[in-house]
Amino acid sequence: MSSGVETSLTVLRILGMTKTADKIIVALDVRSSNEALALVDQLRDQISFFKIGLQLYTAEGPEIVRAVLATGAKVWLDLKLYDIPNTVARAVESASHLGVHMLTIHLSGGGEMIRAAAGARANQLVILGVTVLTSATEQTLREIGIADKVADQVLRLARLGTQAGIDGLVASPHEIKTLRSEFGDKIKIAVQGIRPSWAEPGDQKRFMTPRHAIEAGADYIGIGRPITAHQNPRRAVQRILEELSARS
Ligand code: C5P
Image (cartoon, rainbow, N blue to C red; front, top):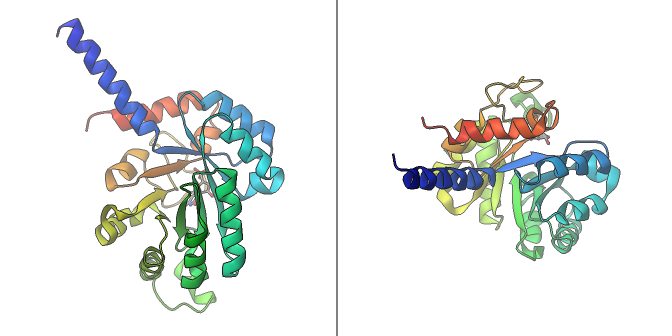
């Protein structure tokens, strides 16, 4: 192979990896801004999207969101809002003004709440709906008076959410195929419960590798501890990118 062709292939491979890297969202599930910003600092040239959830947001508030955004990264604010429609709408406005890229709400809040949330978004905020928490089982649904199977409840809430105007769904990787065949490319799908083949499953029971999740049709894969608890988080990201870019 000529060196020109080799260089072009290397450039294409790097571009491919960059595009793939845009699909990875690192969950900053840590206790403090210092820990979160140390991770962002280490990973920022590899990763451009971070998730801030209830633990970090409750500890550090909007300042940590602003600090991560100030690095030029995107933020998924995973607060899983569930309240009366007016309160959710006002929180969506606040998130829009903060400048986050994605925000989650619980679809079990019902159509009126979802429409209020969708109507209040601004600054191109993407609203993702949570159907049934991945920790929930049929027993959990029974406890709150729902007799359906988890898969049926997921589909019911996903239909309600998309009809009420949300942009996408948070799903278990095992739900991607069903959701894609029902909604096509009209919605964004973000999945969590991801474990690279070399990582410890930990408390995850129904996990999937990054590669299988992307192949199944996920737009975004949220990954936490396999990266953040790794002794070398940069190396962990690199291994995931290599796994994603390897030919089948
Ligand atoms: O397990 P891991 O550290 O990769 O989790 C990353 C994020 O994904 C966490 O914020 C967690 O709340 C979320 N998660 C989820 N459903 C799962 C597993 C993890 O929503 N089944």
